[in-house]
Image (tube, rainbow, N blue to C red; front, side, top):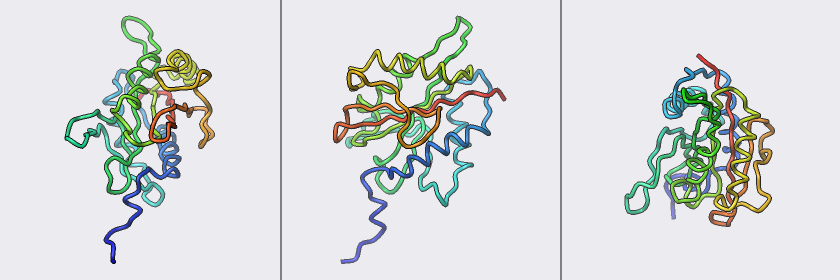
Length: 211
């Protein structure tokens, strides 16, 4: 019996090889991206999404890129909004999502690393049903507003280690070097969650350059 369409486009998981390309596209695109220092994460991400689309190479990047995509359950209830959504194929649920947060911000009231917010308002969303339901991978992106990437990584590391139980991590779980990309700006965390009790979050730390 004939089958219309390409079965690969009905895959149940996002192509692992394309996740590597997503991470590399983000890093490469950021080098030519400049923003006003005062912008919040929403307008930064909106502008960066357009920049990512412009830099996408359709010969190797087999995904589309959406900004603030709304996730719905089977009954039409809103689960959450994905800051950056990389999608393949026909199934809307098969994607690689990235939640974006600012880090190390100098407010008028003083400095804040915002590492706690990165964890509680970002990473937690992968475990409360808002993002990546049924999937085993997701991403976090930190806009390091003062450019101090190493300090931002250490801030987030401490915040993660203080919330291991809520993050479904082992007792010694922490922010690790990325297993698929050798970059000091990309880290990874492992969580006992998801379809096979294994969930990976890739963390990308990007130093902000003033326009």
